[in-house]
Amino acid sequence: MIRRLLWLLCALVLLGGLGWTGATLAMDARVTSLSGLRVDGQRLPPTTDPRAELQARADRWLDQPLGVRAGSVMVVRTRRQLGARVDVEGAVERVSALGRAGGTWRNVNTWWDARRGRIDVPLATEVDRAAIQAFVSGLTDLVDREPVVARYSRSGELLEAGMPGLTLDVDASTDAIATAVLDEEVVLELQVIEDQQPAAPEPPPVQSFGEVVATYSTRFGRNGGRAHNVRLAAERLDGALIAPGGELSFNGQVGARDRRDGFRTAPVIEGGEMVDGVGGGTCQVASTLHAAAFLGGLQIVEHRPHSRPAGYVPLGLDATVVWPNVDLVVRNPYGFPVLVRATHAGRTLRVDLLGARRPPDVRWERAVAQTDEPSERLVEDPSIPWGEARVTQDGIPGYLVVRTRTMDRGHGLITERETLRYPATDRVVRMAPVPPK
Image (cartoon, rainbow, N blue to C red):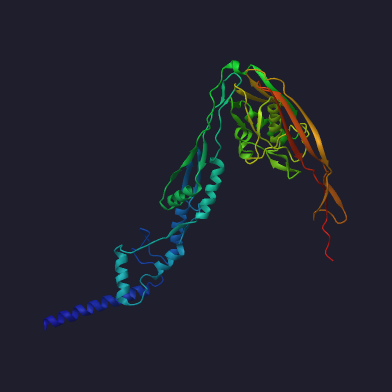
């Protein structure tokens, strides 16, 4: 009899406890998170609005800075700026569903596990690779550079030490940053690949440059951007050394013509028309070098004339260069090194080629074999008022020029003949489009 009374008492206590627990949960239905519940390893206080707490946690994480170092460049961005995201809504849904799955026993077990810290709801994070890749691509403008060849003065003094090129691997850097963002990194070092430094010849003795092999001068105008570019390109060309039998690439010596390298916007010839472009004026430096090399008996390995006559140099002596595809390359045929001196004074650009001795005289002549008259090209332009026409470019005749160079490099008379074509430049007339009927 006593045993039965004990079993009955236990049953009543158990049923009462379950009823109390269910009643407690029901009474506290406004609380959407269980006591003791963990979210991403941290306890979440019972609250009627877990979204606000979880969003605050997400914001603190997203606003943590990450320092990214690439060579000498250091950039700091928050994880939010690097495209990181936190799934707050997903976490809120999982938190709100706990303890409300249906069934008293199941809810009690969930409540008990939460109280003991056994339930941890993940706060999922992810990164936007496209945003990171765009960030890395911007870093390449600051990090990447072309190799620099060492330059020497006329006396053999080192003017500028050679430097290896630098390249930032966009794909590998994107992977590294995506991993660092999720791994709570504070500073990340990206790998910058060094390109092999171009070999520079040993500085020759002072007496190697006692004679002027050739010299040529041109005048440039007052346009500020163009004058700046002429001076900058000349400074980079100055001191170039051409070993016996060696070659000098204008593009390789002067490098890229863009704003990062200090060049400015100025008029350039593009498709036969004068337009604004970064690096305008560099062709005058190439033309002055070409004229000096041509008249000094150097071999012209790669050369292209302009698409229209240049006012600063005679037909047949000009040279056009476009980074990185159109180049001027000259070769030293002599048994001694040739030093290039490119200087500017006022609005005069001068290129001197210096060596151990003066070569025999070089004579040249040119003949215009054909003249082509320009055509007229009509261009519809909505900015032109109806009934008006504006000439935005005058026509320039085209020429077929035959240039001949005669010289003696010590092995007998040499005659070279080359045909250069300057296509005619259209006269451009802009007018309003014809209105529809």
